[in-house]
Length: 375
Ligand SMILES: *Cc1c(COP(=O)(O)O)cnc(C)c1O
Image (cartoon, rainbow, N blue to C red; front, side, top):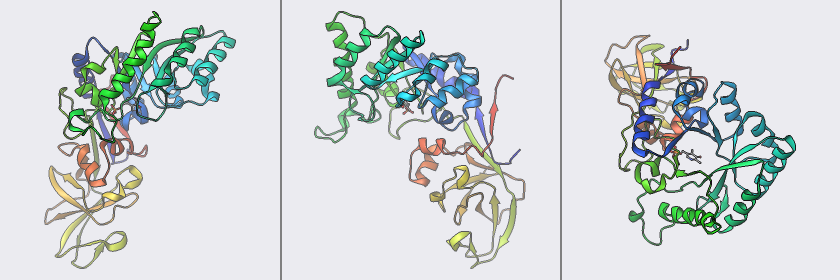
């Protein structure tokens, strides 16, 4: 196997889920497995965690189909936008549709009717994210249509927060950001349409992503949808850590080359960095094609034999260099890029991005090793 690999601590993921579940009970938990399980490797994470999830959420139909082909039988919500021509897949693979428009709901009703089958659906209300969904002020028409459906099983209704990790009171009253509390109010207004008509609301109401799961118990309703939190990462640096979770990811490699470099010899493309005195430079077989972002160049620190060293010179596609000074680091010594105290937030800072982008960009070229998997 490649010396550069990801180690995923599956029992830690399960522990994170249990901690979240204990906090939100009796609300149920949808586990978000989109984007290759936030980079962790869905092929290992999904079979392990599905038995403990009430629902699974992914972004696109292809991800749902992939899960079904892995043998996952848990209900799967396709949370993102769907084109009409993708609807037959929802029937074939028993995927739950986010009904984000009247057209989509109508087409699903028609398709399921002519096939003599049922499609599960959750109404997607846009209360301020302005991404997909029917706005709260137009929701009555969607609801009316949903009540007339006999082939679409409208079991859920949901919305998504744009600013759930920001404390509303910290925002000025004229803030550009839509407050999570305002989005929640709009969602409640939509739910009151059911009450007004004396019909039951769909039985699974859900709004909470990780930020709201941590900060807004009033947003739990019947189910929460924590993504990044399930993976042990907090969605904001200052957010109150009301639920204890820990990262489950370690990114490791091995030194493939070790040499003494003389002063004045620039290291890597562009010769951006050069030693001031003779020093040992080692090469790590991992690069930006693996998701170790080129824009981190000269910022990261890595651990070799437990000690922290600076990355130097341009990060290449497949390799990067580390300055180990006078230490006797040899070919084959273990390198830790993430984990053992190096947290996703640090890589995010070095790359000028967020933890989500760091994790989801670790490429499929990096093998995933699942620890604690039941064979
Ligand atoms: C990705 C996603 C989530 C999870 O978001 P986190 O910030 O990772 O908790 C929840 N709901 C929807 C609709 C999403 O697309």
